[in-house]
Each structure stands twice: as structure tokens, then as C-alpha cells.
Image 1 (tube, rainbow, N blue to C red):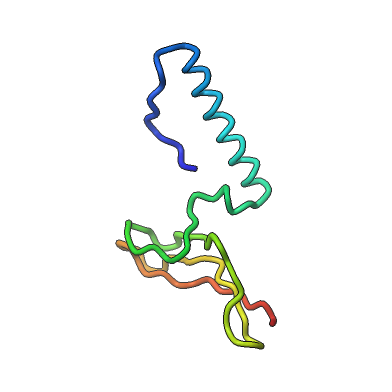
Image 2 (image 1 turned 30 degrees about the horizontal axis):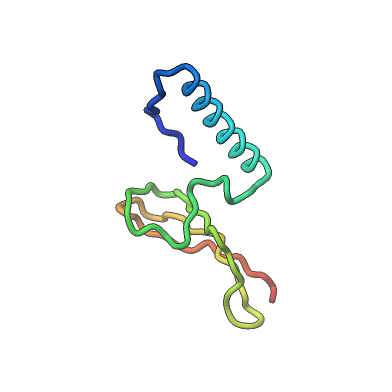
Length: 101
């Protein structure tokens, strides 16, 4: 979840309280999920390396659904992608981890 830097709040007091309560609940849920290491709390996740947008060297995108891949005795999991050259969209390399299978 990304935080809107310019939220529009209702003028009605009851609606305002409800809106603020919803925002607080959503942020608390995300913070709790982050503290537990849950991918659902991460806003920079995807199914592939970015193909649009501007990125800096060192930016990292987590893979939202990692699975084991590769041939027997050299299987791996792609955890995400790291930007090695800044740009639009930059140059991205897979971050792989061997599973030992």
C-alpha cells in the first residue's frame, strides 16, 4: 500500500472520522505485516523486472510469487531483481538463490 501524499478528506465530521480510522487500520495492518516479513506488505513487488518507470542503481523489486526452477541438482529460486544501471527502466538482474535440489 502506498500513502497518498495529498489525501482528500470529507467535510462531514462522521465521514472524516471513518476515513481516518480506515487509513489508520490499513497502515497498522501493513506495519504488522512488514514486521512479520510478509510479502503482502511490500509495495515494491512484482512478477517480473520493471519495463517502465525510472529507477536508480541499487533499487530492488521483490518477486511476488517465487517458485523453484531449473534442472535437477541445480535448482534455484528467483527472489527478485536488482537495478545495476540507473535509467528508464534501468538494467535489471535476477537475484537467484540455489535450493540444493
